[in-house]
Image (cartoon, rainbow, N blue to C red; front, top):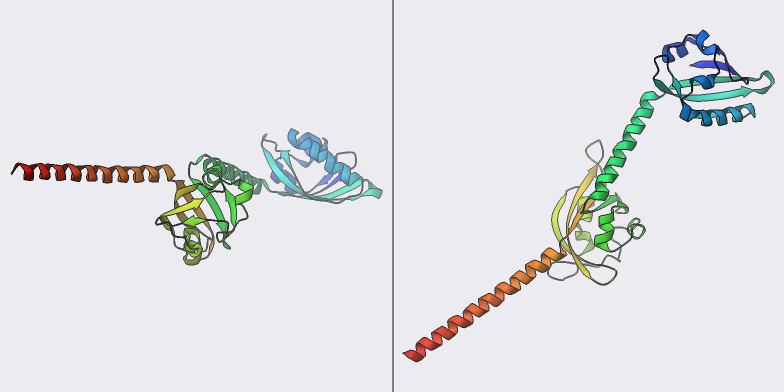
Length: 266
């Protein structure tokens, strides 16, 4: 769309693309100030852009919503240049409604994703291809005992991660699930790891790692790690094992005493 506007706020000339896009005849648009067609929420920014033009500045990539004749609105992206001596503005506009809708849909999808991740009881980490943590959720902060700004930016090989295997031996960083996934592109599931929190306590977590793969289906651009705090579960299991051993020992002692009494009676 191509048009000429005046510093008085009215269109002076419009090409046929305006009628095809908005539905008004040129005569209808020439009769009214262009602000009459602007969405109420966009009037303030449009007035500000107009002031820049009246001061002699070129405006590029400015977007606002124009009301169509059927009452709907379309997003237009503008490039405009003033000619001060003629008090005129030469401008082009492009209908970017579909693009804007795609951006809005993406933003809403991201907000839903963030809400879901934030509500998860599982810890979530997102790492890039270099193994640097780019994002985490609140559960990750709680489980690891670190604030988000202490987690984001760390790498998966950072020496501050103090981890152990189930048998108490150090957990080699090259064997971390996220590092295996980055190296091989393969997911890892239910890997048991003990991790020391900054306060010295040992938390046990079960980790899954999933590769983030580009649309080409080949290259891995990051890893999504999810982990569950199983410290209490592990503590309960160990207590149960201890009680089972104690019970077995007690039964063995009872059996021994019974055998001793039988021998004495004979």
